[in-house]
Amino acid sequence: MTELWVQRTGSRRYSGHSSRGAQVLIGSEDVDGVFTPGELMKVALAACTGMATDVPLARRLGDDYDATVRVSGDADRENERYPKLDEVFELDLSELDPEAAQRLLTVVERAVDRVCTVGRTLKAGTEVSLTIETE
Image 1 (tube, rainbow, N blue to C red):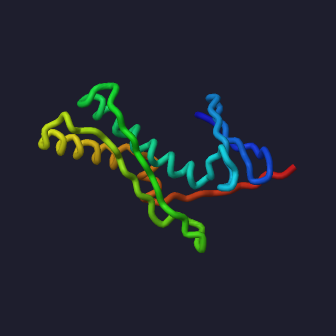
Image 2: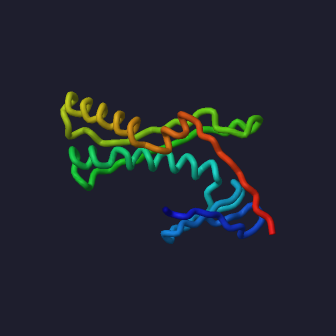
């Protein structure tokens, strides 16, 4: 199993790590070159949507198809949560006839609903536990 952790690098600055060697810079909105935790959550949702649809889209459009998944949603600072996230999947289906394009969109929507773990988790909610270890 991949281990994940963040390490404090400064005031409201962290670096996120995985045991597979990945790294991401995390910080507050006023720091250039970092993602906020909320932005990482949104990027994870968009990436999950894209990855969930990769196989059916590549099968129909070819391995080098272009796709962009944009995600947005403002934080409700009074309650410290994101009440709504909006995704826009930008996909060029102009080479398909309208009927084939509609069939493919149905497959894409089903794939996201079935295998996008991040989206499914956000929609269902999840239990989070915190243990604090001290020395």
